[in-house]
Image (cartoon, rainbow over all chains, first blue to last red; front, top):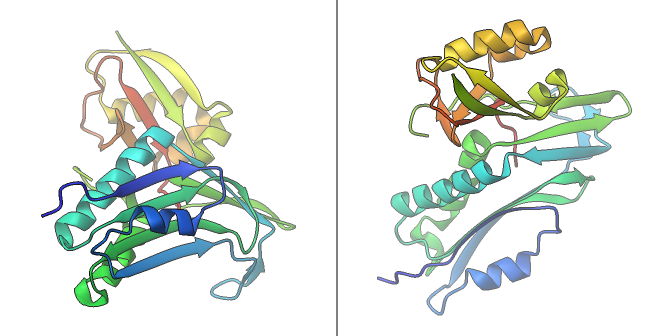
Length: 154
Length: 82
């Protein structure tokens, strides 16, 4: 069992560098990476159709760091075969087509649960990591609020 | 009295008009009591307080928890990162 598995988590105002992150979570034994990235959607058709000029993100940084670390630990508990994990949230004012978040998991092979692990990572980030976004458009601005209420111990 | 630091985020920060404040509260005050106090001291926060998530020293906390001395309390709406 390799003990020093790479785990990266960060809140940043800088552009998310996929190649750099991927290199950092790729081991000699890695053969697969599942990468999820979310970006600012300029035109929304699901639900109430609307356009977005930009999103403005803010975070409770020290707690967000700790909760991202917790998400990574949960991934490792559920999928012990995962090799590297990167969880990055970009904050500040972000415009359509810009990647805002990245979750990447690596493993030896693609049939190891690596897709599910990355999916779990983004779902969990949206539940417990203290980050918020304000949507700004020509119609005004409003804070997007989540729906999840964390339970004790989360 | 216990001295605490309160951090507000997103809608709560905007409605309060400040992002943090320092408060002295009774030693046995619970999160529930703190929410009541803030609702009455800052009427603009009253509505947000109903669905606010609360943290004590960066861990989620609930109404019955007693606020410890020198606590860092976070108050914010359900999160919306990603």
